[in-house]
Length: 318
Ligand code: TXA
Ligand code: MG
Image (tube, rainbow, N blue to C red; front, side):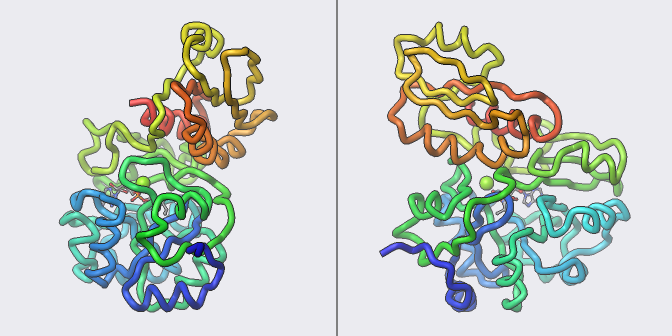
């Protein structure tokens, strides 16, 4: 029997009983549990095979709840929350002691956001606790943007995926931390740098493992298909050089035709970066099922969501 369901009251019941439920958000599906239940939070780490030092994002129902869990909110954090929540920005703020250490990997900060999905907002409003929810994929694998992706990863291990359709944004939230009250981007994501800078001015990016020890999730290899993947700005040459292999192609809008190509996905024929982002992970899931020797991915323009997509594709190739 399928674990996929749209039954909101069943999801609430499971979560109230300290079980896990995969939930839809506008970015990717999350593997959710009660932040105050040690049993549920441990199950999240175990199900994902995620190391305990890698902290979880806390999903809250509304801005007012923020004061219950964090201290000393910088002015620019308030501006960002007001501008983008509910939506794909996660703020890393000083935690209050009510937040269990298991959630934060022992750190004194907690990552928090309000997701923008009607079903999950409704669910959060029904519960009397926030939800810890990392992306609902095994550690280092491609994040799920459809209920079916989650089911294929975890069907024997969780009781339910709350089906909210395909995720609209399609890549994870942008994570912002604060140093001396100034915002810093720890992870590129579904909210573009340009949109953030329009609210808080020029912002620094520290999204490499070497420079951002504060975001332990920024491992080099991440979001990875099982199939070997390369990223290039020179598609034709890359195809030519690998003609002896079974090749799959992931392009922005290029409709390159070549007999060597067994399977091809075009992310946005009309060159729309939002559309490309929303289709990216589903494309990687599909490519990974074609029994290919090599996935050749085209580098996207390096602005707006193109920057975030290139970041994910780079990590997929490591
Ligand atoms: O869009 C999203 O953010 C999705 C949906 C489900 O909300 N969630 C998600 O969670 O991507 P996850 O666990 O896959 O990624 C969370 C990232 C990790 O890289 C983690 O290291 C970082 O957030 N993080 C969490 N708490 C942190 C903290 N206190 N300080 C720095 N980084 C933190
Ligand atoms: Mg993840």
